[in-house]
Image (cartoon, rainbow, N blue to C red; front, side, top):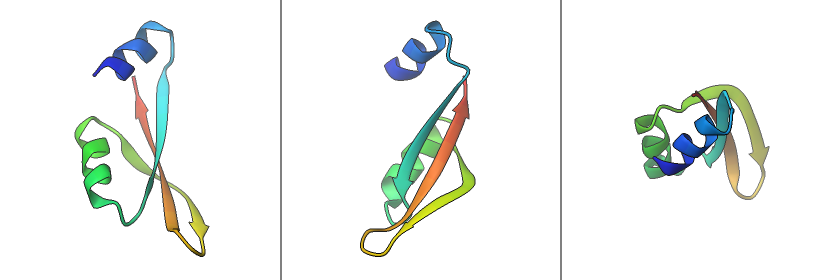
Length: 57
């Protein structure tokens, strides 16, 4: 994946991404490319819960 390659070659050691808890398709894609969900969550009364994911490079 181009973003992962760019981040790795730029010296990053970790990436993070956010996703809404109800967006199962995006959660599956993030898991497929190696992101894991963390304990951190932000709750929005209108939109729902935003999950934070991370991936080591």
